[in-house]
Length: 406
RNA sequence: GGGGAGGUACCAAAGUGGUUAAAUGGAGCGGACUGUAGAUCCGUUGGCUGAACGCCUUCGAAGGUUCGAAUCCUUCCCUCCCCA
Image 1: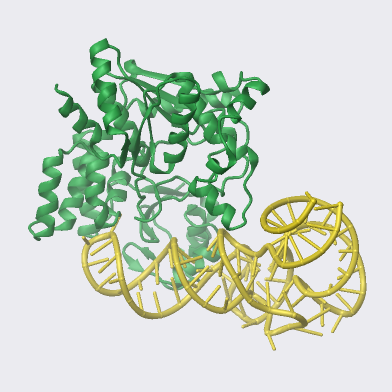
Image 2: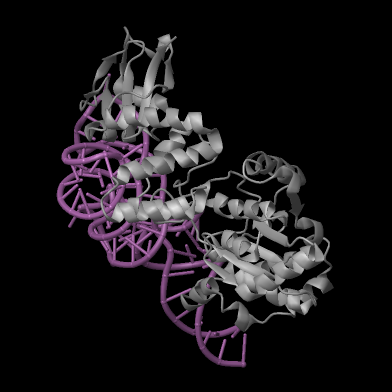
């Protein structure tokens, strides 16, 4: 493979490479010396639930693996104690060694759906950060200045808005930079929000007499709401462990304008084909829904296989195009003593489903017409429902529940 | 160490003794429309009670004044700014 080709694989979907010339030099050197590049990316030890947003970076790592380079999957168990300064995060609880190990296992299980396990090195930064003496920390701190820290957009904003900035938060980028020193990283990957930290890494490496790493930033994938970046806490995520049908459905709910971005960042569809799709969309030669269905298929295929993708699609069409029930529904088990003469108060039933947080919410939902029984809208919150086995209750826009009586 | 400004619901932000479960905006949820998209419109957003404008909890925390407090007083905690 010539370098051009390698470069184009690396460049797909990236936001910024600092710098491309240096990257080319590194690749050339690596080839000449037959020494693979060391590629690093850090992950939060607290949230080992991988979603499509994470896969942007993971897939990029995989591409590096396939190009013969060395991957360091860094679990930030030490830095995780601080939490990347975002203003929102309060001091996080310190994880025990056991918890960290458990999370790491969870990570592995999921991450190896994307990465090549044999070529992946999983490392923990507590390994070196936890061993630094106070004077070594001071030495690290002396390599940077407050003014330079305040260049960071997040810090600058908070400073301007008179919001608190903890001293320890200043340490976060330094620690991350030190990770690069410890690993002698050639390349560090990260989201665009990591740019500052990644750049600090370059400077710190220089201070420690290492060749500065190349930084490659990747876009932050928007979640299903189309606005915020995908994250579990915002509830706008598509997890790679989710059931095919759920995954498919969630992909279908992303805004149209994100389709191309998703194709590029989280599928294997070639850039050529993506471009074709784009043109055909613009010319109205393709219906947006059909394109999104393809997208959903491609994504489900990656994590569940071709067959599951097709089944998920059938399900989707059944429920949303033909307005039928899904094949599989969550079962709601009613015990005999929940019933009075075969009846149950509808509000109670909905509360039992666990799909609402309170009876008041259930009441509201009914009053607003968000509840259907066997396809019939119900708007009487006082209804005593005579339950029958197999009855289907639709609660809200997306939830179906099938009654089971025991 | 001195002086000043603040802490209200998911977020932002009004309210400064009763009519305040707390204006308004954003976000969320539901409905209509649709392609589970977007745009738009309407409704809704503490909980409990088979619902009544009845009760309980909520305006940083704890006490107090009052018939009545997010609003007044005391103490405490936290944040920011200016000066040193």
